[in-house]
Length: 191
Image (cartoon, rainbow, N blue to C red; front, top):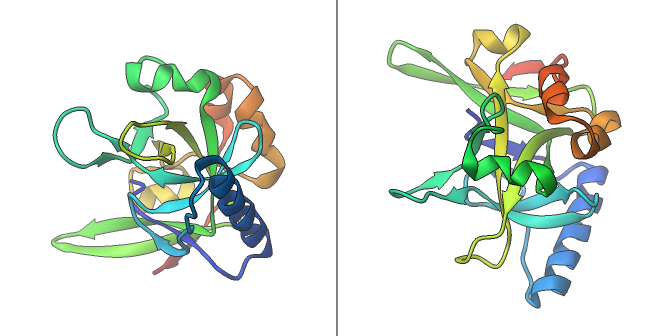
């Protein structure tokens, strides 16, 4: 969990966030970057909201210190005790807008893909970010939690998500309280 998500190109709200993020990245880094829409995979460049509530572009995934690949998720239950993440909790929190996220249910040797969304324009996945030496753009990870309600029937983990009206609480409230109370009803569809 969470290995892919979706950014629809039909959301006015997302279009505003994306354009602002692209302009900001061009201004800060002196080069043009284009945010990806559609199905988002690890290492894709996407719009993200930082603690100053400004949209910026980031790459999904931290470079692993050992081995190949990217670290794309972090367990919310252990981030305070994990040295990679605990320092980021202080001033490197972010929110990742999404139209939906995907999970897979394994039945025997077959995997069925499910889409999770809400009755709003966007959902916001909770994350942490950092700057890495090998990329001009910051990189982020998505925080995960134990799946709740109907989502638990599909997969044991899911992203920590907030509705738009609760976004600022992720930036300014006590993390332990927030991570224990962030769940709300999701709509599940077979993808």
